[in-house]
Length: 419
Length: 92
Image (cartoon, rainbow over all chains, first blue to last red; front, side):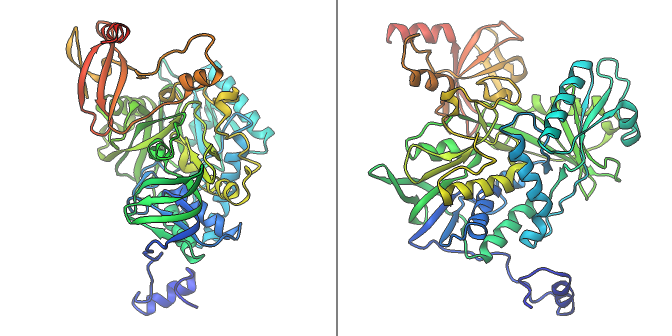
């Protein structure tokens, strides 16, 4: 048995051999002249797409081209939360599909992604918010998703240190999805890359797409910094850079790129055993296995490709955290960073064909892309292989804006920075 | 990021509200469906210089058109939206 398959046996064997037998998790592939499918973007979604194309749809000759390195984009920059606590019919089945894939992911790809179903608790602070969360919980249950409403006493038992009696925002209770939780984000990238590589997918890093070749209205390949790569089909999974890459094919998208900041504190002893969100502001937090508080809040709110944000949002996020749990007031911040969000006009994603033949689009994930990774990959693979949408992604069409069939979970309208 | 308001001078970002791309123009009421979809939903979303609207809500409450680099956040110019619009209408 080779060290290619990770198991207790291979671990023991390599321990005895001084860890000399481990191989790189994926090959450093060089581009071939052509492939059946080229995925542009080696983030979580692109890698998952390649993996499911090879694994479930039996396709071969697949390449993933990535301008940087694997794990260097949003898949390594998020706050690692997974959940399927949505309200609208177009969204719930899709995110529940993702949740189920997370539950079996580690066995499927033979990689420890530290999937931890520690629960996600959305707090509410007034009657109207409670009613909204009960409605959402009911919608989830109607779709077969787990949801529970906790009253203030039950929340107090779970997280006794929260600021329950804040004069303006007393905690009345929360919506709990126990199956939600966190997943080690880097491991998702590495695990999918390794699993796809073992099925023959070429993962080509440091290979930036500079153009999309279209002949007679049909996509024939991509120009890259490492030369032209021919392709039967091209799938775009470029997250925050979707508009730039789509523009190479003459497309304008219902997307603005924005910056979202995230934060990690110094390591602390374990005291938060779930993901908890503050309902009176925008603040969400969990505690990593190293002990750091991983938290975030709103996007900065202006178009940006900078991967860094500004101080007013830092203050806003942290004041939300202080309102929720005053005990973190003397905790020091270890790191903070920004990532690009492909904010769509209705806050929901797009997995669809484009008006250009053989060119497919996976974009508009706003700041909820990580939790969707496995289902996004599966549905995009389905679309690429079969030329029709997967049954849980039928609502994510590019033409829905013109048809008035938007999926506006927050009810904010065509205002990307408010979703 | 600080924004130079033509009335108030250099002010902190927290005084302003963002309203997006300043180059989109409302089509005529009887314009074709596609023109309206374009106006409401589609954006150039450039990496680089971007003309955008900011509202100085916690200041003089004027609307400002800023030209800002979305890669560096550097602001190249700011002017009152009313001025920018009247210039555009007079074709200069």
